[in-house]
Amino acid sequence: MFKSFIKIESLALKLMISVGIVLFASIFIWSHFTLKFQEKTLINKKISEVDKFCNTVLNFTWFAMLHNPNKDMQEILKSMSEYNDIESIRIFNCQGQIKFSNTDMGLGAIVEKTDVACKTCHETETPVIRKDIKDRVRIFKSDQDELLLGIMNPILNEPSCSTAQCHYHLKGINKLGALDVVVSLKDVKTEISFTKTMSVWTAIYLFIILAITIGVSIFTLVTDPIKKLINETDLIGKGNYRNNTNKISQKDEIGQLSIAIHDMGYKIKSKQTELNRQKDLYQNLFDQVPCTITVQNRDYQLLEFNQGFSKKFKPEYGDFCYSAYKDLNKKCNDCPVERTFIDGKSHFSEESGINKDGTIAHWFVKTAPLKDEKGNIVAALEMSIDISRRKKLEGIVKDSERKYQAIFESIPNPVFILDIDNYKIMTCNNKALEVYDYKKDELKNKPFSFLFPEKGEFEKFKQNLDNPFHERLINHKKNRESIWVNIWVSPAEFTQQKVLLVTVLDITLSVETEHQLIQAGKMATLGEMATGVAHELNQPLSVIKTASSFISRKIDRNEPIDKDILNTLSQEIESHVDRASKITNHMRLFGRKSTFSKEIVNLNETIKKAFDIFSQQLKLREIEVKWK
Image 1 (cartoon, one colour):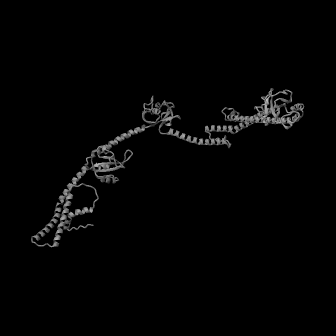
Image 2 (cartoon, one colour):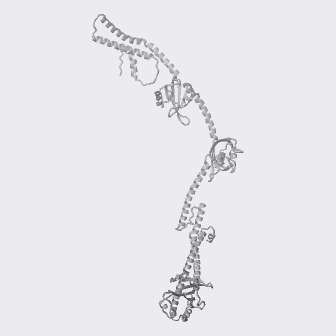
Image 3 (cartoon, one colour):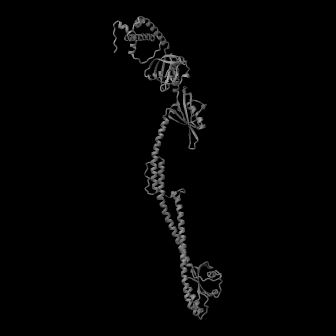
């Protein structure tokens, strides 16, 4: 207990000093004013006693002054001076002469107005009769340094005094003289001294009792609980959050502080548990990430590294990074760690080197600055990913790309790669440029419909993309020359994008050859049909000839022609002319060179048109055709 009190930085000592100073000052002020009050009370009491004594003296001397003052007055004053520590009793006349006294010293002498006893009434040029006792009292010290109390009482003129035979006074005089009584304050001083002594001891007693009480209270209510709280915070600092032995049961602020510290301990425990979990998580991430991580100082020495780096290179703390896993004697020429220390920014680089076993290695390197609480860069974090296998695969992929590009360019037919969303040409092979007579930049990002002569033709192609084969389509070359093509469409993936792979076959020469063969076949067919067609044409011509001959004979004979007969003849002529016209039109269409295109036709109409040519011959051979 006392060890904690004697410490200069102790809260209890500070409280004791501050409370002690306040307590001491309070007791001192209380004692001071108490003593002053006691002293004033005793003096006022003494003044009251002396004032009563003065009145008694005046009453005793009044009778003696009327009859025989010179004989009785001195005896009266001497006998009365033996009462209550009377030092002197003097009676002055109005001229300031001591007429009577309890001692013979100074008897008959005239006292100056400046004397202490006379100043009470003679402070001004005109004497003032002061009836208030406070104005007639004086306290002073004697030549022997003894404290004295003096009271000056005026002796007023009364009717009995102005008619007495012993001495005569005029009626107009108010004041006949003064009675001055001086008493010793030795008993008052003794009592005041005793009171002071008792007050001092009382103050000391109260100070000690209150100091002990306050000290015990401070230790019990403040020091000991705070010591327990300090011990508890030390335990919390050491990670012990479950100690309840120092729990304080007080209901005051200290108790609330204890509860708050306990709550803080549990909160810190939960936070610390979470921090430990995150720390373990980050440590596991730091060690288990599929890359090597190092922390380096400005001298490129290893301050920290993860397990991946440790297992792969087996370094020691303090090794230089360039010697630990790059087998170099000095830092790299283009060092991202150095740049991070210079500008405080993250840097990325791709580096190549030789492993300690002599194999070629490649890394992706990313750096980041590590700063202290003042923002100064104290270290750099370097994360390296070994991309040696990736580099090897990249080489294989590049070789494969070159091979497939060579195959793509060597395909003997035009090949287009179209965007599946907007049908724009992403790229094409050299054969496509050769067939369509374009440059690659002229076709790139152009819509595939650009190669079709009509928009409707491309729309038909686009609507039938589910069909992988499109036969006999017409495309345009750069010079607007039309070519016949067959198109194969298949979905594919190109640079991680869904595309359409369009293969084109130029069939223009085949189509032209086919047209020539068809035309030759038509001509041969026309030759074979010539006899039948001639017979078909001969019949309507014969009908027309017969009708015209009949009409001619009637005209030559000047015979009238029956209207009905003439109408019949005209109808027959018209009918056979139409039939002959149809036959010639059919022959002309059949023999004409035409382009081929797929379209929907009515097959019955086509057969009927072909039947019209030979229908008459069928009738002659008694062949009846029925259409249903």
